[in-house]
Length: 285
Image: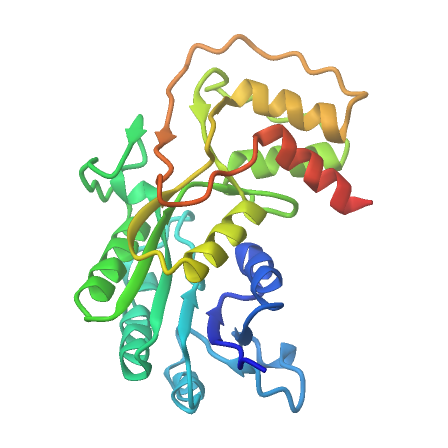
């Protein structure tokens, strides 16, 4: 029997991490990290304590005998006014540590960065778009990228668009809308109803990360939905699927600022927005 490759997965209890764990667990031996010690099952060597801000917890990773891949998803989110000093240890220095671990094990590191390091107000983002760091959070992501690319390890950096799905974080407005529809509430009125976005479904993102490992994709890649939709259309489709009795009347929108992220041609294509919603609906049943 062929021995399974070993993956160290950080952020495994998070929104994306849960889906990545589910996607990878059938084909790989997964070592999951937990920030909260209480969530670790007793006598389970594949669950370890690792808190990005607790340097003592880093020893648990140093004790691992063999790692083939590191999938680093854990991060301190910085959309609530956090400054650089709040996030530097968790989002930068911790990545440098993991890059060194990857080097020691001759392992590949897959890092979840963000497409918005190109600028939160950019209309079109593609591989040639200049870096524009307009928030401390994006600064930490870019510094982490630089540490990885200079560490002489095999890597794949994924600059990911906004991720949506069931129980998704509300800092992405479309997740808030999904949660409102599930609660049978009216949606908040967005000001930019005609603006187009190509967010990515969380399960698609997980499948793409698995494919990156399977096909040994390297380098830096933008990851987003294959097709774009207006915010207006996304809201309508969400309510058609989750709360069809609700008849939405939109205020007239004076804004139509797009933000389209060019999904890498090296990565698998993603399913449509409506198919993603149908998948969410079926998973509820």
